[in-house]
Amino acid sequence: MSIIMPRPKKYRLIGETPLALYFKPRGIPLRDLEEIELSLDELETIKLKDLKGLNQEECAKRMQISRATFARILRSARKKIARFLLEAKALKIDEKVRLINARKYRCLECLKEFEIRAGKNVRSTVCPFCGSDKFESLHKILWR
Ligand SMILES: [Zn+2]
Image (cartoon, rainbow, N blue to C red; front, side, top):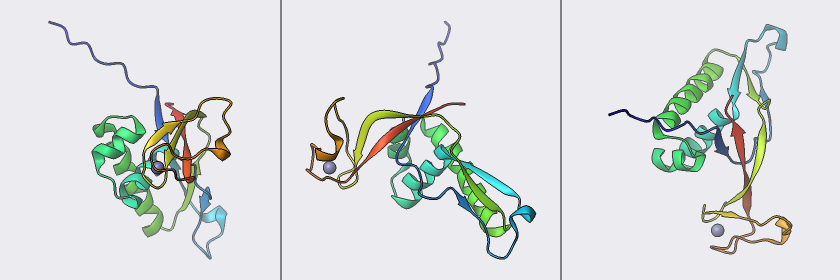
């Protein structure tokens, strides 16, 4: 009996991209700093797990990746951030990935996901579950 491996998903789902993309310690010139590059999916794991406090299964579901993959990305992200803080490095968010608007949105109040049909005005839309007008668009990040 042969085991058919499921084909890996070609993307990961992430929420809004960060407001700032570069961080450096004060007092050290940029040319003397080593850069650490944090990818958008690494940042997303930190956002979901450490900032929002979701459990690992929920986080993986939101990014549409396996729990093992989520755990691996999270480990890598935490290590990079620890090095940034402790070894006086510069931290750069890698935004050179291809982002595709997934036409999906996530409510920031009730955290449920929903879609907005093409042609519908996003600004006049509210969450179909709780009526909140605070939601973020989700993006697909193409697997490099
Ligand atoms: Zn809602």
